[in-house]
Image 1 (cartoon, one colour):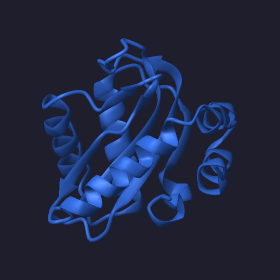
Image 2 (spheres, helix red, strand yellow; image 1 turned 45 degrees about the horizontal axis):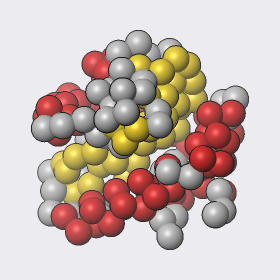
Image 3 (cartoon, rainbow, N blue to C red; image 1 turned 60 degrees about the horizontal axis):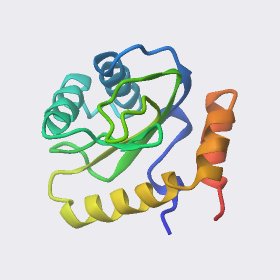
Length: 152
């Protein structure tokens, strides 16, 4: 089972963000991570996430997306959890707008780790009770707490 404590931090949790588009989301997510991890430049994160997204949507359906990429200056896997005030179009397979996004960044050479974490995140985010609790969080601290304390 994936332990979100190992990749998420309170500083990289954002609750009910008022973002209105995919572009604004990628900008805000890149800034959020860069502020907490200064060795990772926001413009590099943004470009890398956008390049990955151009290969195909990272939306899973049911209002969930896991934008992800590998970065050269990333020393260990890290994530950012963002819920949106209003869902945005993310070209999901079920055409449902997205309101829960978990950004995953991994080291450039972390191929297997990348796949393992993605699988764990997809499994966790497929649980209705977990997603319901994330959507009910009132602030970033509560969002982080729900994410890191959820038990299946």
